[in-house]
Length: 253
Image 1 (spheres, rainbow, N blue to C red):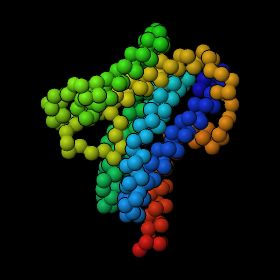
Image 2 (cartoon, rainbow, N blue to C red; image 1 turned 180 degrees about the vertical axis):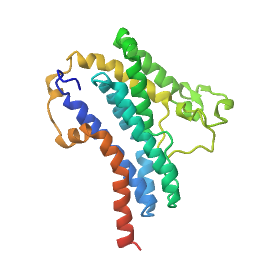
Image 3 (cartoon, helix red, strand yellow; image 1 turned 45 degrees about the horizontal axis):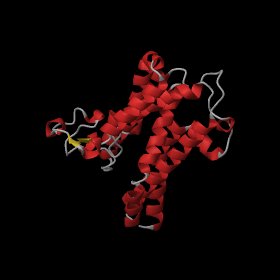
Image 4 (tube, rainbow, N blue to C red; image 1 turned 120 degrees about the vertical axis):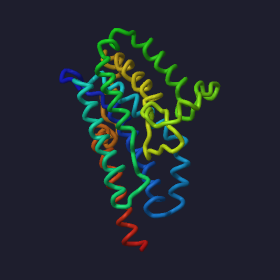
């Protein structure tokens, strides 16, 4: 945040809450993958119905924070660099040690990094557009394009041509063939528009229109996680995976 701005704690708390929900969700998948317990997959699949809510909270808040950052594009480059490191580890290094199925080619950090860079570069234009108009347009485009990955628009009213899904060259935008797999996948379409929705909403936030309680701590653990969300997100999967591996070799072998 800019030094002359008062920190908006509620954003940290909501982002921390969303991160914790994501971590819990991933943990149940690891229960199935590492411990071989079928109920882990069942809980993971059940939570998939509500998980998009936490994704949306996290991405919108990231968009809002892009208006509070000193240098959004620079921050985006850092996040994208971390994302590319994850791809190297999961898609190149881990398979060398017989860990397959965890490859991440375009996950949440890839998406957020590029969204931040695009928003940072476009900030002069974004600031010229009425934030209410920008929010409305981005919300509509997000809803229209939400089904791009499953080859539809307008929630199934329009089917997209199969020719768009014959290769994986445009997988960053949601277009890929049936052979494509990424353990974590967040294409720019539609999520870029949700990020931009947050970026426009940030105009309202930076004007100090939020109530006083938004600047106060309510759940310190959530706000602590939210302040360090990038590094916690990077660390959570290796830590959880390592703990479950230890449990497996100590108690289940």
